[in-house]
Each structure stands twice: as structure tokens, then as C-alpha cells.
Image (cartoon, rainbow, N blue to C red; front, top):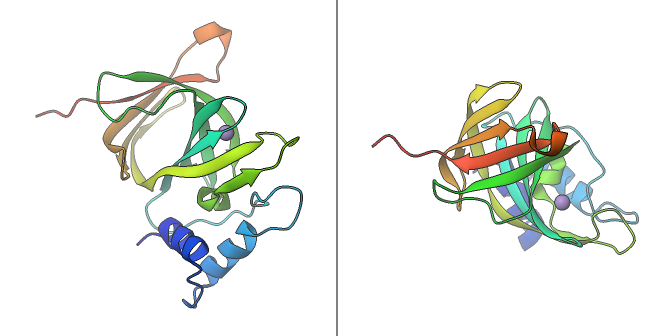
Amino acid sequence: MNLNRRMNNGCKKGNRKKKNISLIRACRNYRAIGKSPEPKGKTETTGNMPIYIIQKHAARRLHYDLRLEMGGVLKSWAIPKEPPTVPGIKRLAVQVEDHSIDYASFEGVIPEGLYGAGTVEIWDSGNFQPIEVEENKIVLSINGKRLKGKFCLIRTKFQESDKNWLFFKLKSKR
Ligand code: MN
């Protein structure tokens, strides 16, 4: 079981008996005191396969936040429509600011008045294997519950912005 899932299980089910420092730390962050329940941002790598997560975020506009653990942070993209589970569907994925690793376990409500106000829930989680990582192209094998297989992110010049990528599933070769 990867750290991410352990964190989720630990935080969600109140299973705090496992003497796991990372888990306890994750839960402490999860319960961070402040205006927002969001984690405050510690960098912590899992040491295993990199984290893959999609959070469904019911903000002013519903979207899906794809996050991939790369270089000690969660590289993040906001996808305005449901992420593609089969080949043939291309989704716009707008790159947003990097998030800290501990954000991967976050579910909860960001209060009114704060940036991103609304409910965040984990839509899919697991890990991924990078196959090709370039400036404008990322090919990866995703091992999640909803998304499985080879996926691609390609940067586009849509609307003159370099934040816009396309996210889609690749056809398997058989
Ligand atoms: Mn979001």
C-alpha cells in the first residue's frame, strides 16, 4: 500500500494506531488549524512510485485537479471536464501552481471567501511511472482506480498561453 493511500485511510477512518511517523505527520497537516483546512505545505517524498491523484473540486466551476509527483512537488493541472478513462477523448488541462506533496491526501471544504472555495474530494488515486518527460510532453503510465494505462500530456499554444495542455489516454498497442 503506498503512502498516499495509507494517509487517506489513516485520516479518513481514524485508524491512527499504526505507528507510522509519516501517517501521523500527514494527519497533523490534514488537520492544520487556520482559515482553511488545506495542508500548509511540507515537502515529503514517498520513496516509492510517484504519486498520482485527481481531486474533484466543486469550486465556482467544477473541475478536476490532476496532480503528479515530480521533483519533490505535485505538478498540477486543472481539467474542466471529467478526465478521460478511454482513448479518443482529449481534455484541456490548464497547468496551475505546484502543490506540496502532502496536498495529495487532502479532502475537505475550502471555506467561502478563500481561493478555490468549495468541496475537494479524491476522485482517483494511485501512482504513475514516467515514460517520457520533456518540456512540452509527458508520457506516463497511470496506475489508478479510474485511470489505468498509458496517458499523454502535451503542451499546446491554445489561446497564446503556455499553461494549456491536452490530456488524453493512448491506445494500447494490441
Ligand atoms: Mn482546483
